[in-house]
Length: 403
Image (cartoon, rainbow, N blue to C red; front, top):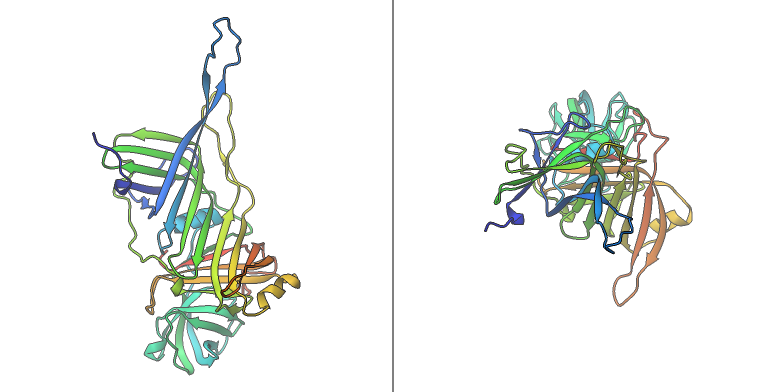
């Protein structure tokens, strides 16, 4: 007797054209997982009759529901549809800025890129993005490498080189181009998208398909330890499940980008890249739930969602009072996070920015070891942001260089 095995299971997802329109065929994406569980539950209603035979008459079927959780190791280009669905805006490219006259200079362990005229911010560059330089007569070591923007004015971008190398001071160099690598998304203030997915678990060794439909992304988590892989999960809420003996999706795409590890990441708090953090987590949620039953149907009519809420924790060696005093002084600050899949100049990168965060609590531990404090934070809408400023008016921005 054949028995389904996890290593043979293929989990794939594809965006639907709309509510009630299950997706099928080609162009699905494999969910690269460490574990996933999708299920369909049914409400039940017990009979309440009191009968002379002294026995329960059983229960009736009620509303069918679907939900699931997919756990993963973070990789670029794999989950952009799901991040975009949660944030309610599709990933989009930022137009490259050409014909720049640039001067590159050292600034401590970081670098400044100064343009001769124009406005980086109005041209779409934002703090937290990863950019690359090309064109002109730039030195070879300055061309095409990942530069993380950690501070920004109209004419000066302060950047950190992600691969551990250095830039070469030079300039002004004419005819240069600055490009935001890959694509970005963020929660907008208007024109929010509403995406539904079909998610299939295909048990290839027993030829059984379970297709979960009208699934919305209800939230996600990310966990960055001091050392090790960046892990996380997406949670889904949907309306139903159908079963079959053939696969619903044909040859779903499996991305081949590398998984990301903490040693290739940086975190900036209030504009300062931190060197004593031991852990960082993000939890994003918008209270997705089945909207409920209607008479005459055993499935719900919609998946409802609420406000986008983002929170998390930071753990850090207690080497100064800088982070603690943000709590004492009730100071709202930005947090920016970036991680690459290796140390090469053009590694794939995922960057996440939270433009306005408040920290609550700074619980210390103890023992015959270095003292670690745990800081909880809650992100909020950054009302001072703008499309022509250094940060957008949003709660979260994500860049995926392989999107």
